[in-house]
Length: 107
Image (cartoon, rainbow, N blue to C red; front, top):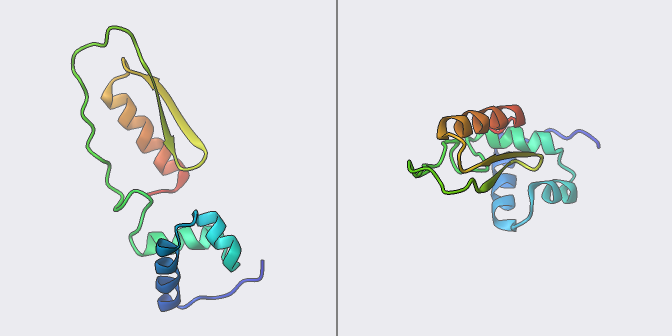
């Protein structure tokens, strides 16, 4: 892919076009000849994250033990899947999510 330098105002405009396009980032970048990693860097430079601000969402945890452990899957990005069950502590889940987000470069 030929490297093209985009000015800051171009990057902001392109990010806005993507937000209104309804496309996945990868498809949007491919159709416009933009490197995916560059696009993700532009998002980070603008303080944008896939989760709207980079903060974790509040989670309610039922302190009562479950009758039987129920499976749970948490997808982080497109590759990482954290699997746990209803007996997994909230602290362990939070630690796993933080590590996955950092490893994926989402923060």
